[in-house]
Length: 454
Figure 1 (cartoon, rainbow, N blue to C red):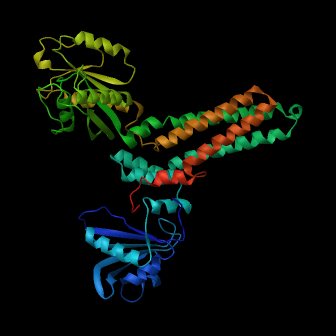
Figure 2 (cartoon, helix red, strand yellow):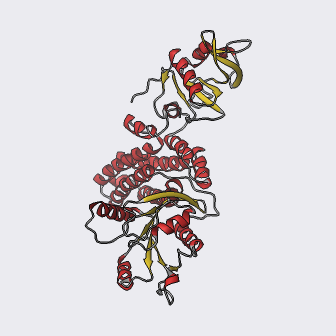
Figure 3 (cartoon, rainbow, N blue to C red):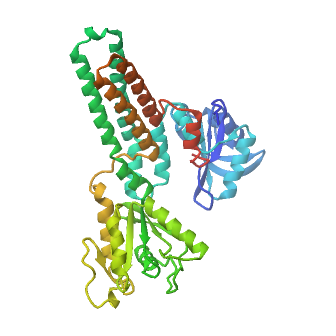
């Protein structure tokens, strides 16, 4: 929704439930005036205090004390939103914060929309869209590495890469458009060679940034690992062993797991979303059939599929034949070694173990880590994260730029006009990543995922 920048907004900035403190945040031109109306502090009103300071006081409703609080005072532009901001820190718990917020709203503030504080920070130029999304990434980080990468993005590491790419493409587009003013026979060959070289370098820079997606995706969203196999091969037992808790029901009855069960754990700094799925078999049970279809969908979306086989299965050789056509990353595990008289099948990279005897779980962890860390240097500082939105914009911008590059190489005069247009489309797409170009619908989509108080 369109943002009225002359409104003063307020919201509770701490999660519900019991805690040491609760925070009510106020931002906008009337923030200090509202604080003067509801906060009583010794010596002078909050608005008369120096900026970037705090004061101990009381929130009062008429003559009645609601809570003893600490008030933080920030004057524009030196605040999170680049507006006048007041933060009232009271005692934790739902009631204290709600009573203070009600007084703030009664004093003239409007209840903030989701993400509206961060949205104002963007609209005031304090941060760009990449940094704004990093705020949400930091809040939702599942591991230390993901948190570190989000902070790196918040500090502008990824924004710098986008801006360098934007500026380089802008310069190349400007030079290309400048050539349109010259007759074709008067344009030095060296100029077109230089433009062609610049565009090739930009194309390389596109690829380098897009290549960080695999690592960014794993750290930001977690790797989806799907455990697949026939009923009763030990999928639920494997899930429980990896999680070190009884998350899934284990039973000898086929078809016990009819829907996927997903949990998250951290494996060598990588968040792993591990899913136990319905056993793959032919069935007439409609509910089980739907569960099996969901299993196939998850396998197609997985970063890694764990194929679990029963060493005592008489149809094992036939089942293994199906692996020859599998193209997606996968790990093969043979279970029930305790019931198998000889060694397991000779399949490179596979594991043989007995989940019943609780052996081999560490081997599975090591194998998962090896597979998932193939695109990540676990000893290096995390690269800036790239969200799916960023990746899609980069791919589309690269496509426009490459189309323009082909037109430049064609040498046709009419091709240069079209090439310049392609470059401009590419610039607009890159600009949408950082917010140099945006529409309200884009902002609604991004900031609508935030909580109310952020």
